[in-house]
Length: 399
Image (cartoon, rainbow, N blue to C red; front, side):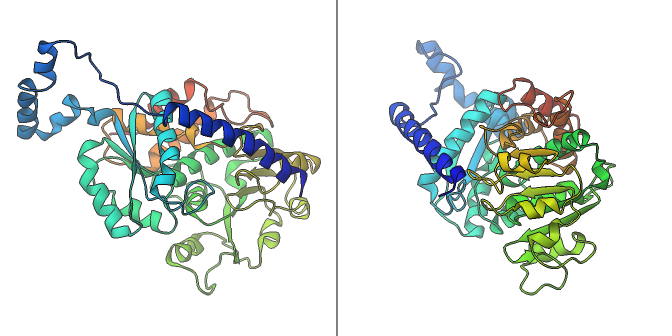
C-alpha cells in the first residue's frame, strides 16, 4: 500500500469516527427555528389562525407576494436522487441525507439562506423532473446535487423553465472555482489565460462543466476563454468520429480537441499547460508532467486521493498544484461558489443562473486573492468575504 493511500485511510477513519459521533449526538445537523417568538394568543393569532388567512388571500390575489410574505425569497431546495453521492456512488436517498444536510448548513452559515434536503426515491429522469416541478412553489431556488451523469444534464436543462434559479452544483460550482483558480494560477506561472492548452481528465458532470466554462463561448458576452481544451474519458481522448460516443460527448467533440488528437491521457498531455483532473486516484504519472510545457499547472481534484499527490508534483517542479482536499494548499471547493451564487440570484430575483453570472462569480473569487502565489491561488473556504463578493458580482448581472 502506498504512503498516500495509507495516510488517507488513516485520516479518513479518524474523521469518519468523529463525524459519526457528532451526527449521533446532534441527530443530524439541521433544526427549524421560528423567525419570531410564539409566546401568547396575540402571537398565535397573527402567526396562525385567524390572521394567516389574510396573508393567504393576499397571495392568492397576487402570487408574486409569496416572495415578500413567506420563506420562499430566501429558501433553497437541495435536491438529490442519491445516484452519485461524493465519491461513494449510487448509495440512495437516505444515505445522501447527511451530505444534503451539510450543504444546507453551508448555505445558512455562509450566505444566510435557509436550505432543506430533498432526497427523492426515484432515479427516473421524468419522475425526478416532475417531482421538482411540483415542489418548486416552496423554494426560491433549487440546488441539484449528486445526480449521476448523463441524467444530471437533462434534469437541469428541463428545469430551466421553473422561473426560479436551478443549478447543478457538481457541474457549475466546480467550474466556477476551477476558473477562478486558473485565472490566478496563470498569473503565478506568467502564462496568458487565453493561450492555455487545458487537458480535462474525466468527462462526467464536473469535467463537462469545467470544459465549457473554460473553453466555450456560450453568449456574445466578451469574456476570456482558453486556447484549447482536450477532454479525456476512461476510453481516451474524445474526438469527432470516435465510436460509441454518447450524445453529450459528441457535442464535446464538436468544439474540443481542435487538432483531432487521438490516444490516451499520455498523448493528450504532450505540450499542455494545464491538467484538470476530475477522475481517479494516481492516474497522472510523472512522465506525463515532464511532457507538459514549462511551469505546468496541475489541478488534481479526485477525492480523497488525487490524481497525483502534491509532494510528488512539487518534486517535478510544477508551477502550481491544487487539489480538492483541505489539508493541502489551494483547495478547490464548491463551497467557495454556490452560497454566493444562490444568494446573489435570490436577492436579484433572477429567473435563472446564466453564463454571465458564472463568469462574474469566478472573477470575483479570483480578485479576492490580491497577490496570488504558488501556495495561494484561491481564498479560504471560511473566508467571510467570499459569499458577499460572489453574491454582489452575480447580482450585478441581473437585468
